[in-house]
Amino acid sequence: MPEPIAIAAGLTLDPACLEVRFVRASGPGGQNVNKVSTAVELSCDLGRSGLPLEVRARALALAGSRATLDQRILISAQRFRTQQMNRDDALARLIELLARAAVRPRRRIATQPGRGARERRLSDKRAQSAIKRERGRRSSDD
Image (tube, rainbow, N blue to C red; front, side, top):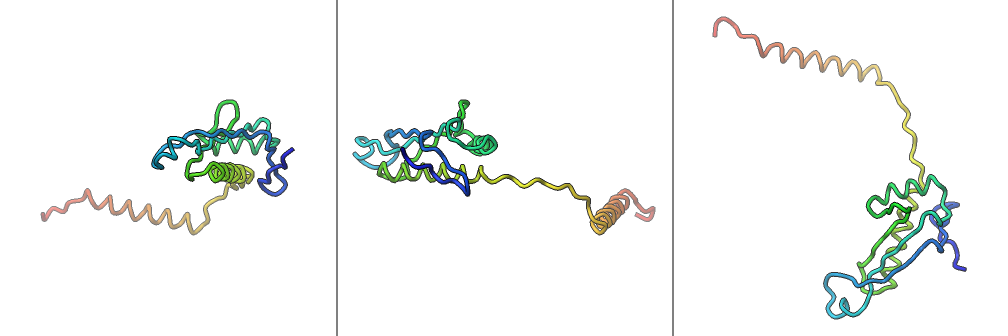
């Protein structure tokens, strides 16, 4: 049985949830493109991944259009000319996405504006008000 893949501290991914498909790559490459399936489509079934529920939810949100309704993340890689390099690239991108999902976002603590900020805001409002008030006035000697 393959070893679990390390994602972050204390977090691993079960390799059984990964499926790798090789397809023909598009773009330049001469006969190599027409004959060899070097592009990789990596599919990760988050339901079988063994990851905590909150990490899975954040991963699906981060994946965006790469996520499917049945909780799979699809990553395609065709940057390189060999299957192995594209497989490694796809796996590295999946690990990077899951590592970002493993970081719990910090809660925002609501704060009040300071006294100096309030005074600056009010003095700026008074200055702007004075500018607009002077615009409408016309003297009689024009």
